[in-house]
Figure 1: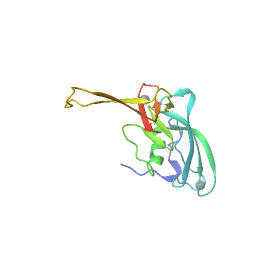
Figure 2 (figure 1 turned 180 degrees about the vertical axis):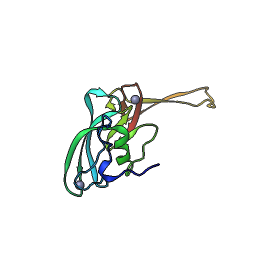
Figure 3 (figure 1 turned 90 degrees about the horizontal axis):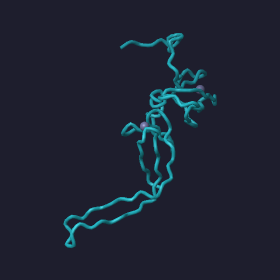
Figure 4 (figure 1 turned 120 degrees about the vertical axis):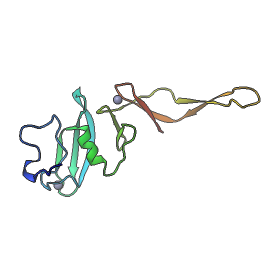
Length: 143
Ligand SMILES: [Zn+2]
Ligand SMILES: [Zn+2]
């Protein structure tokens, strides 16, 4: 564990592909409001393009950033679960924003094995949004 001096936070040229969200005016990330997160073109695993403003000084920034770096900002307000990073209605998995996947409503098949009439299958349709990651990971959200 070592402390990083203010003036040399990035270690010169030894910078990762993504830049840490940071307000240069305030020298802080405390007031950053992330406006959007989009995939880079071409997609870069773990790196997304973000736009954000600083609520303290109204500065606007846009640049690529590593998902983990964005997570540290978002962690102030959001708790990621199961490897999915949530930002507003954006969900990021594998370092890329998940795409909305408009398929038929999710059908939940419920089994009632102790029913008198034997196993009974009930299809329940729920209005949900399904988001899909490029890796095939899917998650559904309450509509
Ligand atoms: Zn600022
Ligand atoms: Zn994924």
